[in-house]
Image (cartoon, rainbow, N blue to C red; front, side, top):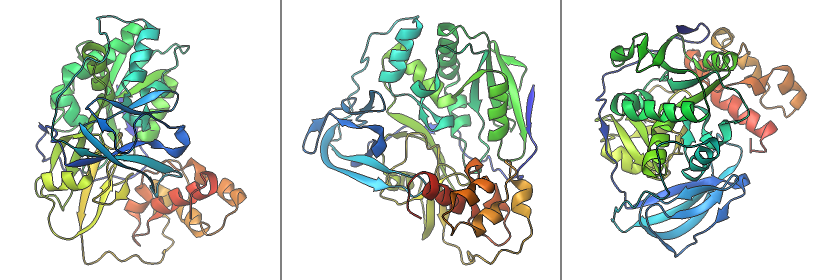
Length: 408
């Protein structure tokens, strides 16, 4: 079985990176993302309070807990706007006391669960479903008769192998996590979606451990084709890190307080796949991977789809990559030459150059006529543009301004 992405761009992908995962190290302090301000945040701890690892700091989105990933003292609470999102994110600054004392299981564990019990564990373990940049609890509908589970292991961005590294290092945990979902919700089939490269050759078989393999080929981005495939097959789509976290929650009573991140790019002398505690400052990761020289920018979430972060900020729970880009001499942008390449590669068949030209207008009617809201922010238009126009970034800002209440 294959999924072929025919629309988009061909990307150069370098796979020469150590696929072992570096264990996390406890930073001096963390900036823990609590949630978006519109998430109805209920704070449990406040400035001056001491917290232990796995203590609940707050509840967000219908009672999902936010756990401290280290032991220490809360020294600040603040909100910060992330330009690519239309609302502010609230953070808690916690100074570490350098103790790392795990105390799970936090709840009773057993071999099998009914639907209600497993949904409760998914909720209180705050598991993130990384393909959707949100909590797994929001993407399971018990009333839906799913025909299959799709384990998404598609790393289609350059400098991002976090999914592949998770699968290679935690294969049993990933598969067992998916099987828990399949048994509990009576889903008859499990499939693993994976891109073919020499790192994944051992998985390129027709079936592994009763799990079917689906190869994803073609151009970047593969996302629209995967979404269509999942919808057509009434599938529950989950990420590899999500499956691993579910296994840990169901069998060890452990909430998700860390995730795997690929730290790479021309500015990282020692690129690596790292386990990262929630709230770890990017500066800590850059030092760990020997970022060198004057950096032009650091991009979280992948070089194609991601957003620029400062060295003092922290990654969000679903960010699987941190790309380090050194300063280069020739980074000038030029006027649009009307070549139309951005429209040729757009997987949603939009006209990015027309949207860019109208981005200074605040008319929702114009945006609707240009279908700007259909953009999936893959960045293929920016990648192919000979004038180096930041098309993807501008379209995201335009949509946030029109529909999300953000600043232009």
